[in-house]
Image (cartoon, rainbow, N blue to C red):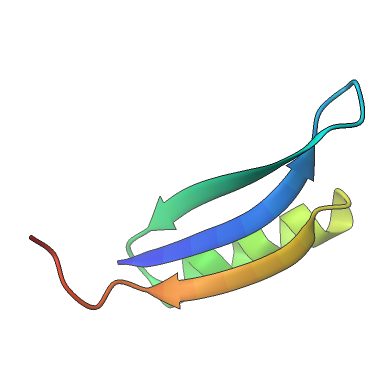
Length: 52
């Protein structure tokens, strides 16, 4: 599982952290590219190492 972590902005100008999860790396890369076009900042793709 891969997670896309990014800072998004509300309609009022406040930044908040958002996390979306995907099964494949390709899906995560597509999401990250779309979020970058939308103006998201500090975009990171992380791979789940351990599931409890």
